[in-house]
Image 1 (cartoon, helix red, strand yellow):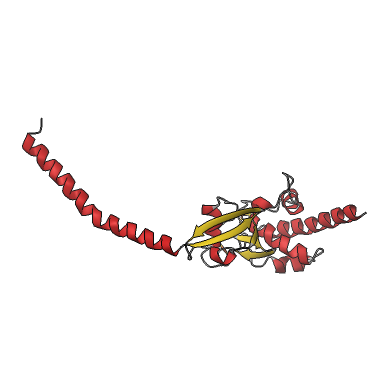
Image 2: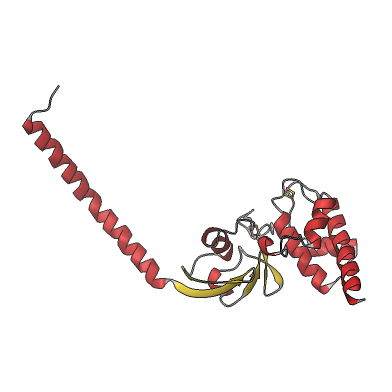
Length: 201
Ligand code: FES
Ligand code: FES
């Protein structure tokens, strides 16, 4: 049935009222966003050899900055309690849980994520060893495991199994493939020592 001019006018009036009613919250949201933007902090970080400058909210965690701002989703979030280690990255060469740091705390830092470990398309010995030794099942914990192991091997190039287990105790594998993870780290240590010796000879 066709609308009368009176009905049409009434509908138009309702739309106008609905629009007007929506305006105050929208304005409040815009003001909140503007306030948040005014508090943003400028940071410069070098991630996987590439420098990035960004404005970040002071409350943003490093892991969220890496994943959502830089798109480096190899760094995982596995808990809300800083326990699982899935979010481990190298910060100035040391493994850290990137869910326990604010992005602003990483200002001027050098960061390596799992995406930055291979060189020129060639896997790092740790990545090779995890592959060869089946050191992963679902793979969710693997980036954090590999970067924590990388930190260990920098300080202890020939760790015992006990030392490997101790170094990785902050990293949980929900698939519980710990034996193969330890074997992979041990193999990687052997590979790295062999390559270092070959390079030195
Ligand atoms: S997500 Fe960082 S420790 Fe679990
Ligand atoms: S391989 Fe699945 S959580 Fe470790």
